[in-house]
Image (cartoon, rainbow, N blue to C red; front, side, top):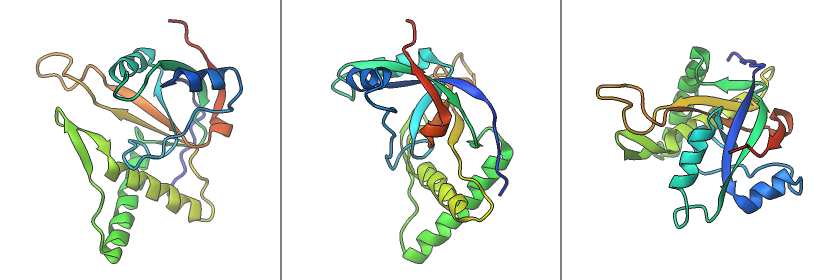
Length: 195
């Protein structure tokens, strides 16, 4: 497997409860909370919308109490992607395909079914249990392979929302998402975005 090094520095935007955001911004907590759900789109880590504060604002509005947040707040971050599993790169997709074959074989030996992507909304999966399992399998393979360096972040593009216009393949909430797995290396600083 090829290790893809991306020297890019990007701005990311994360939505969380105001209390947690203030703890991080005031340096009472070092980092935002990482997600480790079985359905996480890019595996486990801290999630950000790349360069899209508008998409973060939309998400915050959609997830107001009682759905998820009582008092959502957007936190910005300066992110150095480091050794990035960039799913916009064809080599990374080949690595995912190999990880899927590995996971499928392991699940078959254990007599368990593969996880499935589920909870479709307008034809697009919102819970990506299979994708998360494949990405986490890839991380496990890389960590156990001598000479390969573990990934610090994962980056992927997602189609989401209504079509931008009739017949469009572009959607109103298309975005690039980043999952930071190694915040100590990748996150250079947090900031409060100006509304």
